[in-house]
Image (cartoon, rainbow, N blue to C red; front, side, top):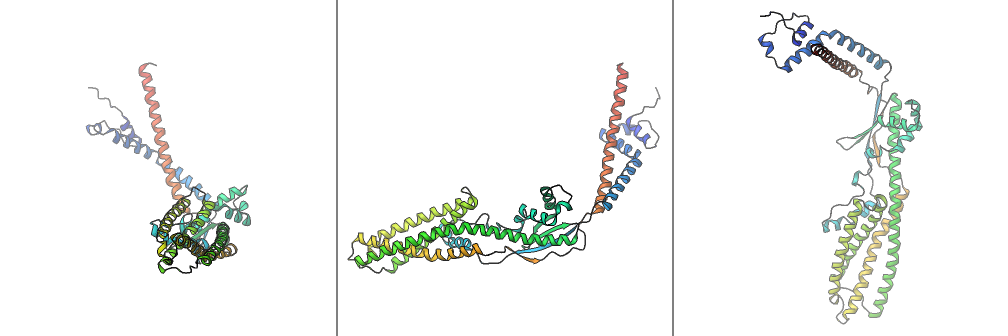
Length: 415
């Protein structure tokens, strides 16, 4: 039997780490392919451990030089703001006016464009108008060493942040290489947020006052017509009073007409602000349809009982006419009592400045830096370099083995 020692990749791996190359024993021959590959890879890495360590130290040293000499310190300033507490405007009053009818009709609560959180500091913080104004004012094009305003705004947005705490406060933060400038900019951002909120509120007030004014002027004309017609009827037939039952039912009808008018005003505002296909428009249209249906049912019922509401010596046709005139007068009077305050408040909303947010804590000059975290950067550089070097060495070793096997196969085949 030939006693020549046979060298395998596994034995080569042992030789690579300085050990003797033993003959394949029965235990070695039973190793799985995955186990053999793992041992070979570890042997390759151990053979080049000083190369890996040297490259890691060199890269980490270069990273340390850059981190400590070229990367500036950043300081983060924070301001805490709260939603301002103020009385609701005309839109809020009109919306609350139809809440009772919605509940009676089984409809969900109405909201304007997303509910109470339509204008939060976090949504207004994304305003490009706000960022461009501050970038120009503080010359961040030069600070960030950018060529134009849009690029500087992109850099600025990366350092501007906002979050909402569990208590409901909004934290507006900005980081800069200058601690004093970071605090100044954070406070200016809060001021600009209020300016944008005021402008948006005025835009809504302009849409609202147009719809309310048109409906109010029409109401004045309808009320004047109803008053004259009712007065003429009273003089002609001498009917001046109704039973308490009739008054109660007409008051209920007038209330529903008031809710319907409020919903129509909100519908016009929603169309102007959010478009005809928005969810708010669909909700208002459904509400108006339900109110009209209920009004139709109540009016029909009252007309059928008209003869019981007026003196018995009056003809049924006259009784129905009287009830119709009285009902129109009651409705228009009720609408005027509702629309006049809303109209006056809409005019006030258009003129006053509404602060959407109040500052709980102004931003102060930060003492401690917020970044960069150099120790983490250096640790990541060392570990990352070690991983990359290990992968590269294993790939090179694998490719060298493939070339060796290919050359041996060519020699055997005589190619």
